[in-house]
Structures are given as C-alpha cells and as structure tokens.
View (cartoon, one colour):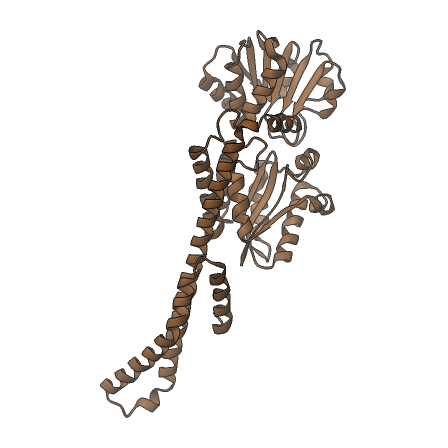
Length: 420
C-alpha cells in the first residue's frame, strides 16, 4: 500500500474552478464514506477550504486510485473530470509528507504562515476519524504535519503581522477606505472563525467605525460572537435579511461558506453611496456582477493574493526559516517511518523462520522417535541455532540500513525473496 494526495489548489487552478470544486462541510462525511468504499482506497482524509480541495489517502494501485478519487470529486462537485484533471496536484509516497507539512506550515497559503489552515486540517482529521476513514497511517502523518506547523509558528516570525485571511481582508478594507471608515456602517456576513477575525480587526481600526452588523444563518452563533467582542457598536441579524440592510452601508465583508451567492446585483442597485465589498468566500457569497455597478468596488481572494505578494519582502527570511524546519521535520518523520518499517519486516522475517523450524520439526517428528527427550531438545536447539545464524546477517543489514533508501530496497527484496 502507498500514500497519495490529490487536490485542486490556488497555485494551480483559477478562482472560478476553485469555487466550483469547493464542497460544503456538511457533505464531507459522505465524501469520506464514498472514497473508502472504493477498491483501491483504504484510508482517506478530505480537506476542503476556500483555496484547497484535497484528498490524502492510503491506496493500492496508483492509477486505479487516481481514477477513483477524481471520479468521486466529480460526482460530489458536479464537475466533469475533464474540467479539472489538468489542474490537479498529485503527490506520491515521500512527497506527500513534504506537501502536507508545507500546507500545515502555511507555506502554501495565500498569506504565508496563516493560522487558519491548522484548524482546518485538524477538523478534517477529526471528521475522518469519526467516520472511520482514517487509519493509523493518515492519522500519523496529519498529526505530525500539524505539530510541525505549530513548531514553525513558534520558532519563526512567519506569523508576525498579517497572518490570516481575516486579518488580510480587514487590512485591505482599512487601507482602501482610509478615513472613510470613520463613522461608517459595516456589514459582516458570517460568524465563524474567519468572520470573527474580521470583526475583531475592524472594531480595533482607526478611525473607529460607527456600527457593525453581523448577519448569520444561525443567530445563536452570531450572538456568541457579539458577546465575545463585547462592543456596543455590534448588532446581529438573520442572514436572510441582509439584503434589507444595505442602504447606508460603506463596507460589506463576506466570510461565508455558501453554495450560491446570498447577495446579488439587484440587492445593491438601490444603494446610493459607494460600497466596498470584500468577498472571502469560495464560492462567492456576493454575485460577481455587482462589479457592473459604478458605485460598487469589489475585492476578492484573487485581489487579496496580489496584495499579500507585494508585501512579502520583509518576511522572506522567516519563510526560508520555516522551509528549513519543514524539511527537517519531514526527514525525521520519513526516517522514523522507514525505521518502523524495518522493525516490522525484521519481526516478520524472524516469525517466518520460526514457523519453518516448528513446522519442519513437526513434519519430521517420526524420524526422531528413537531419541531421548534430551536428544530431541539438542536437535531442536541445533536446528534453531543454525536458522538463527542464517537469519542474523539479513536482520543486521535491515536494521543498519533503516531510514535510508538502501533500507527501503533491502526491505522490498526481503519481502520478495521470503514471500513475506
């Protein structure tokens, strides 16, 4: 069996394709059950964020598993395989660790070092464990990747400054509006982790805004956020009524997970003043045709990515340091994996020889009938001693080469030679 990752991400696919490939969280469990029902997939974790849709799996046949994963993605998202097969990122065996550890470190995020990805990976693993699609192998690599991601953030300055979409979005809005934010009415769609970061960043902005309204499907969650920030400027409303409260709004920030836009061009037509829309959703929560309105200025994740790239100069050193930590942690993980593999095959080899001795002595027992118990014990001891000496050199070689490419080759050869 082997480890593989197959995904669509912002580095290799357009925002439009990512929108269409994103799967709502309530459908992840079904996705996992479908994946592990396939012949070539034994374990699976499914990750779907605003800029990444990915499967990490333990598989049998490589090409068979690729077909099963892509077909499952197509069925779940409604896409045709031909629409995304040229944009897939595929990693196999050792490369999966390098990829996943880099993702956890935030090195593959639009905002390097952003902390939200760690929570997303953790939730993906927890759901896979709950759905019993995660076995020991994918659980181990996810836990180690998350631990490495935490180490990167504690030992480097990669998380200094703008470290999340939420912070970057709020910063972009504040930079765009400047003094116009002072005394303004702001609307935030959503009350999750990203929305929480947006709300807190905007409330601490200067000049201070006058009013912030949180719209969410679940009012209890919005109320919880309002209590958390404990600011008299904050109020909450049902998401269904958001279009009724746009008059006089200067800034709309969307941090929602939706399958279709909740605000359309028609909802903004009556707005007399200028409105800045910052849409962090993939798929978009605010219809893209609002750009046609002269008084609407829109920022989405594509714009945010460009802004971040222009301001990365002072963080290159931290990124380099993070990459070194990731490389170190990956090598340590792979060495331990190879060492564990050597320990397993050494045990299997010894058990194989022990079974041969036991079965052969039992088969030839009638030849030893004339011997005394002491003589029988001597013969048994002699046979086991000879077999142990034969097994000694292969065992030592496997242990000494553990954690190296040579060790991997020796392990494969041993399995083939002794049919383990």
